[in-house]
Structure formats: structure tokens, C-alpha cells
Image (cartoon, rainbow, N blue to C red; front, side, top):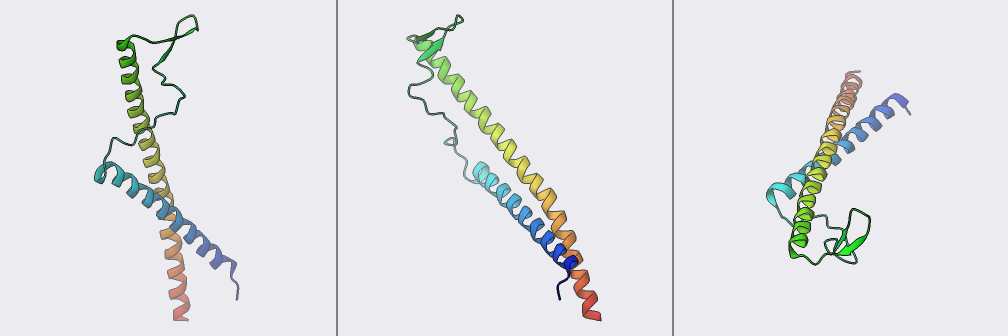
Length: 126
């Protein structure tokens, strides 16, 4: 016999479990990549046809080729700092997504799983 209420509880429990598993696996992956397997190889360089440190835009909007080694070094330093900030920003965004999935999925799953067990025990007594 089809019972819509029980089916809804089952679907809600499955959805909550899926959200929890995705959030937990994302959190574990982030933890592993930042603690167990740390690396400076996680950079987010943009592919250019030429290096962005080869060309400088002047205040009047013209492009000129940089020939000064100090300007090139300053540009490369700024690019490395930008990569670090971007990596930190990506980590913060990913960890907040993982925490949000866990915070939503775990209570939904636990509540509906508890409802299913309560209903099962009630029918078992009858």
C-alpha cells in the first residue's frame, strides 16, 4: 500500500543524507588538501599569450613594454600575493559551503530518520 506521508519522509531523509554526505566529503577534502597534503602548487594563474608583467598601462591609457627589471619583479610579486589572496578566498568560500551543507543536511536527515524509526516501532507493536 502506497503511503504518501511515509514516502515524503523517506525522500526527505534521503535528501538530507545526500546533503550531509556532500558537505562532509567537501570538508574532508579541504582538510586533506590544507593539512595532510599542503602544497604551494594550488595557484590560480591565468593563462596569457604574454606575461602580464611584460606590458604596463600608463595613466593616459597607452600600453608600453616594461624593460625595467624592478618593475617586472614588482609585478611578479603582486601576482604571487594576488594568487595567495585568491586561494584563501576560495578556501573560505568552499569551507562555508561545506559547513552550510552539513548544517542543513544533518538535522534534516536525523529528524526524518527518527520519524521513520518511530513509525516502524509503532507498526511493529501493532
